[in-house]
Length: 373
Image (tube, rainbow, N blue to C red; front, side, top):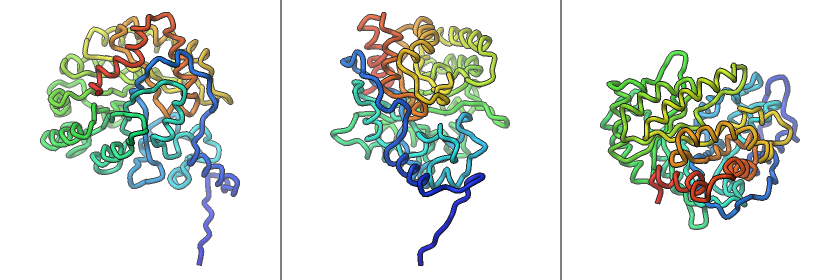
């Protein structure tokens, strides 16, 4: 006997049409400006050092807390059953659509069409359980006809959950990850109400675990808010041989903040960080910072260039052209922007640069910093 069940979502139920819509979202994906612009400087080779592959349809592998950590994805309509089984947060949380379907290499290659992406770096997304298995899955997705890419892995959850809490286990895992092509480690350093990651404390167990990255020549990607940047200076000073990459221009916040004061503070913090030659910056962002996710149609490359030129040009001037690299942050940014529009915008921001400088920003720096083959 077949069982029929109705799932209650917030204040109503999903119609058959809505179920089919969500099925289409999972299978085909979703983005604003889905057609995109024709690429400019189409012969410029690009390494995208920040994109994700994930499997939301397999809860035994996918850690849903990864998506819930994005504050801008939270909604009063959020329903766990809908989130887990239909891959959407709720009927009215349409900005989450791109985050709710499986995103595998074939879909990424579809998004990047037109732009000359030659290599990439897949970022960890909070794999459940054995993290080595995620690396094995990433390796298994690469075929002769797919984009060659490396993997950036989070491995700090060993022992009691602290980076370096069990140095022997951490050493063993770093060795295994390195052997499978992992090029670096990322940790979300965002402060929480009851917990502050001690990444700026030289004698902490966390710092001892961090020191192992130098042993295996692994890069560290730092995801933290702009007001934590002063503490990152201590990490760079304590571990001068480890390359540290600040994600997303230092995470300038959107929403109800004093933006003028935020930018002023951010510039001070970045200038201080730039003094440490082992610190680099990803010229990437979260599209919601300018409210693009609320637009009916995503921004053009001209709009992206206009909004982000002051931030990006400041960073290039501050850190130098040798320590910056453009990145997409896809499919997180797919909530609001088209991939081709995004990279066209990046290219327009640095159109005055020489070809040698453009190659560094879009290709060479990522190859060098991450030791890509």
